[in-house]
Length: 384
Figure 1: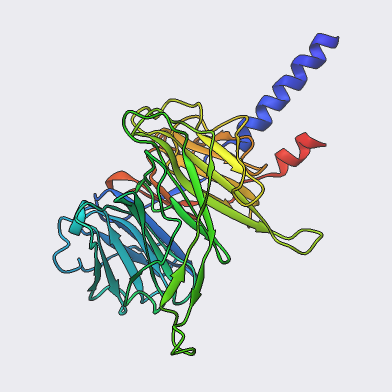
Figure 2: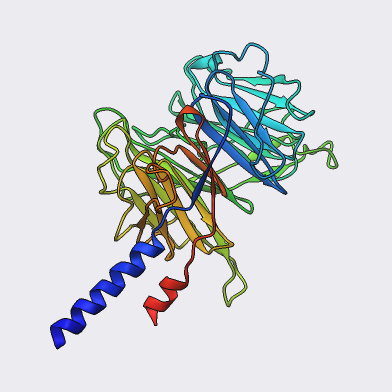
């Protein structure tokens, strides 16, 4: 009798887990075969996506129809790894490549026309990620040049870009960021964070650099937009994959929550692994509960290399994606479980994804998906 009860309990738990882990991606029509790595959900049904061969897409109706934008001038062969938008009309796209192949273009008319606003001034540089933090401010991160990370900022909505006055940009040996999903750099309030990988011939653990940005106007023009940004970074080791140039931390996301003391708590989740070994499931995620000062490896990590992670405040869960699948966490990244296709989804609905900006996800060959609501009632029932 006791063994029968145990078998019944195990069967029920397995059934609940399987039901909970059904994939929730609705595949959308993008009308492109470009590899998409940039995605930004602005809200109100507006989202922008970007990819290879100068591709930029836009939707104003929540993804029902994706518009193919005009290619920015001279960008037919550029790889737009990142896109960030202010609204349905104004957006900035970032191309990644060596030297002057890293460029920023801006549109103010819903992608009918574009203007080249910034080109990489470093011949040996390579841009990795672009992040808008408010209606006028954005930051741009590039790989180290002469031993220092390239960090630029704008305070006028992206029309003009300046190098940050940053005494702490010195890179640890082997550090460099990844341009896999435009999410190696993230922010929470005035705080900035970026993650790194390791380089060929090293096994140095990845790092997260964190700072509180202080942008101030020039002394002689106290009411002018800030033209000086002082950014002093601190650095922390992250227990994730460190097997060389293809390994490390690929994506960061934050969640800010209030505490009893009234001071907001910043939780960070990092994902990555080794991108040329996508099935390797060890050392693929870590979490920090103290604003990035200390990190702990996930007890049950995602089941493969992951290129992007995001927090869904509506469903109160974290979601991460990669070439071999999708995983979710309901305990701030400590434990992850796979999200697999349901019987009504395409067999590969959970796979072949590059980047997230919830509820949207993008991938190679023009893949775009939209997240459906995930039923968490079964998780609550299991905890009781």
